[in-house]
Image 1 (cartoon, rainbow, N blue to C red):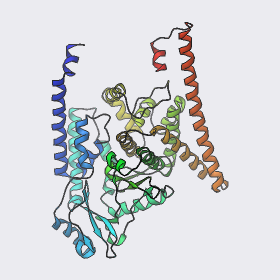
Image 2: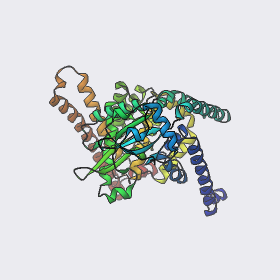
Image 3: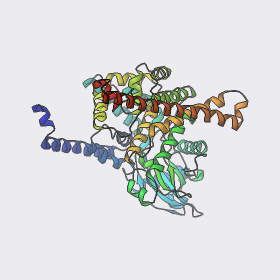
Image 4: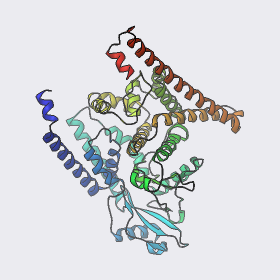
Length: 473
C-alpha cells in the first residue's frame, strides 16, 4: 500500500471528508430552501444518484422531497382571492392553513368540500411565476460560469431544452389533465390510485384532488408495519413506470419517493398512489419501439442488437449508452445483473463519470430530447428499488414489460384483425414467451459451460487463465 493510498483510507481522512461532504450538503439544502422553486427541484433530482454521491448528500437532500418552503396564511388567502374571488374558508367547508407537505412549487393543505369529502389542496407559491424566468436566467449564468472554468462541463443546453417542460409544471390545470390521462392509461393496473380531480376548486395555481393516505415508498419500516410486502411494492412500482416508458409513452418524469405513496389495498397487498403529475414527457412510438428492443437486447447480451437500436435512438457509442441506461456496468460474458452494485462496480461507475465525461455528454446530446426525463424516471425508480432492498429483478421485469409493450405496439400497427383482443393477446404472449425462453436457455448454456470448464480443470485436462476465471465468477 502506497503512502498516498494509506493516507486517503485512514480513519482521520475519512472523517474529515465526511464532515466536508456534510457541510456542503447542508449548504445546498439551505440554499435550495431559501430560493425555492427550481433550486429545490434540482436538489430532489440529486437524491436519485445514491450510487454515485456520498451518503451525506443523499441523507441531507431527502428533506427536499416533501418539506421545503412554508408560506404565511395571508399569501394563501391572496392567491385564492386572485383565482377564485374567495378565501379558502369561503370555498371549502374546512381548510387547514398548516400545510401537510411543502415542496418545490407548492404546499399542500388538507380541506373538506362542502359535502364533507376530504381533499388535498395544492397551492402554488404566489411569487413563483414572477420568479421563474429570473431563476432560469440565474441558472443559465451559473452554468456559463462553470463552463468557462470547466469547458467540458456544458449543461446549458439541457436547461434550454427542459425550460418549456418545466414551465408546464406551473400550470396546475395542465397537471390535472395529466393525472386524468395517467389514470385512464393505467386503469388496468388495479393496484394504482390516481387522486380524482375536483375541477370547480381547481385553477392554474390551485389543484384540488381526492385526499389519499399512505406512506412514502422509501419508508421501509412503515411499509413493513402495515404488513405489506417490500417485494410486491417494488414489483408494482417498476411495472407501472415500465408500462409508461415502453407502451403508453406518456411518462411521469418526477417519481421521487414523495410522489409515490404506499398503502394496503382491498386485497391486503400493496396499493400505490401516484401524486404530482405536473412534469410529464412523451416518447414517440418510434423511440418506444427502439427502446423496447434495446432493453431486451441488453438483458440477452445481444451486442449486435444493442448497437442497432442505440443507433435508432441516435447514439453511436452504444455500449456507454447502455451502461448509462441501466446505471451499472455490463459484463457481456454473463447474463447476471445484480440490482445492488458491488464496491468494484460502484467504483467503475464513479470512474466512468469522471474519465468519460465528454463521451457521456455527447451521448446525452445525441439521443432524443425526451430521453433526458426518461433517464430521470429510470434512475429514480432504480434508487427506490435499492432503498427497498432490491427485492425484485428490476432489469428482468422491465425487459418483460418491454417485450409486452413492443407486442402491443405491433398489434395496434397491423391492420384490422389484430384489433381483436384474442389476436393481440396471443401475439404479445408469444413475444414474451420467446424472450423468456431465450433468456432461460442462455443462462442454462452459460451455467453448463462453467460446469464443464471447472470439471476439465479438476481432471487436469485444461488450464484456465485469469480471464476465464473472471468468466466463471
